[in-house]
Amino acid sequence: MFIMQTQNPNLSLPDPFLIRTYFRLAASLHLFHVEESIAEGWPSSQLFSLSTKAQRNLRYLWHFVPKVIRLQCFRVLIMIGKRLYPPSFTGYMHRLPFGIYAKECYRAPRNEGEALRLVEQYTSIPSPLCVDEYQANNPILIMTTVPGQTLDQVYHRLSYPQRAQLSKDLRNILTQLRRIPNQTSHAFGNTHGGPLNDHRLPSGTRGPFDLISEFNAYLIHMCVSDETKEKISKIHARQYRSLFTHADLHPSNIIIDHGRLSGIVDWESSGFYPEYWEFTKIMYGVQGYAAIEPIMRDVFTEDSSYEEELAAEKLLWYDTPFGI
Image (cartoon, rainbow, N blue to C red; front, side):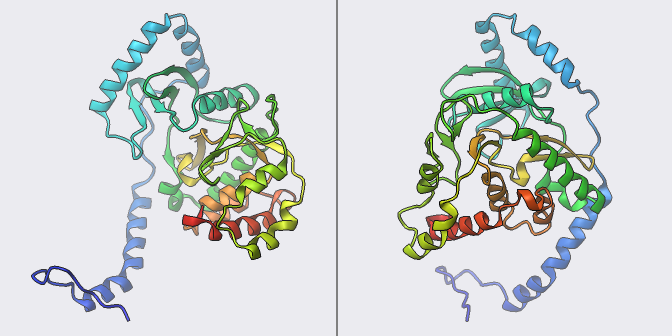
């Protein structure tokens, strides 16, 4: 039985009847909120936006400006942006004027910029363009914005045909990603052959690895039980291809504009991982999003689904402290 109490005897407790009433009405009230959001429709498009080709041309011209002047301009724009726009949730992402962002890449220096260059070179995936990079207190990446809202904010507005189209678009994106060649000297590592940066990994950063056995061994935290080790041993004995992977296709990194996929953001964890990693990380990220999980599962066909690997990963999630 749940008992409410307070350390302050002068502070009155809420009426249990009211709490039970709210509990029964909360789901219905949420549906009213969803209905109101849908009725509002999609937000208006930007009055002015440049095509990707125009952005690339401007970037090309911008790099004729001496670097010292470019860096001073970015510092001024960051100061202006802090006055004009609210801070981001993490505090490391800064919105600037002219439709660009500055990101402090303290966790994976160089990796996100290199990932964006690879995506631009080898694919047609809509994503931010890497405009510039420089070193401050943390490495700073300057990149363009992607119009729209994150999937976790607007999934309830998507019709069933739009959800099916989103799965199809994401499937096409993953197909393109897997064609990016690994030109580093390691089988499993980040975009320039350095350590992988993924919050699923114990301690967050580790590697690079040359063997799948080395990668899988590092997934097993010291707190993992012998029973779990036995259950996953057959899965971890398998061999897997090394493929380019976004590694964080969380609903907050998938951008939707007027019902269609407009871009993928936050590439700092990307690199070359075992072929099953994209699927298991997506399933890791959609926990708690019951309406989004079917969309993401439809991205993978029977031939590209890794249900046994997911089952092994779930055992590790639950055995590892804090579920990671």
